[in-house]
Image 1 (cartoon, rainbow, N blue to C red):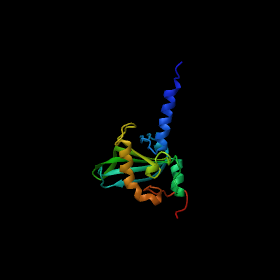
Image 2: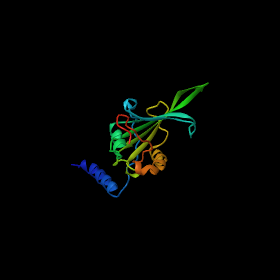
Image 3: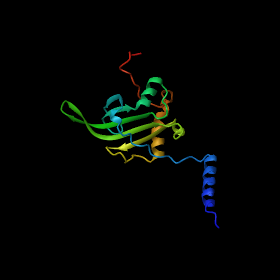
Image 4: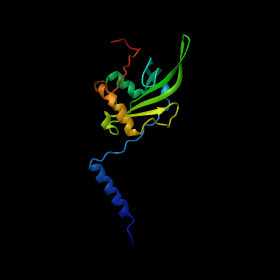
Length: 167
């Protein structure tokens, strides 16, 4: 009688050897953050120029990210969303235009140890599935800038809790 468990056991041993030898897990895309427009609004800005031209930027944070903004230490599970729109200018009126991208930062120190504990991704336009980059390129592109904010938890924005007195 043949032992059918041997191939499965060999596969398990090979997997354990790979991980114990320090082989990195392949990076995965960050999930689209459903419902983020209902999270805490951190800030907005009108940008006159930039790589994508002028735009309106809104930043949202889930409850764990708000905890990080307040304490200065972002816990695992924190998610920050950067929602970027173009502008429509007509005479003296400027309105929000089409969505350009949705940038997402997810704090998971086990999954994203090489990038300060943050996973980065960028969704194109209104899509919840079309990514601007492959995961390794998103990590490299985004983290290259965010590393300069190491002392701020790798986060550029600050949050003034309007319910508390200003510092």
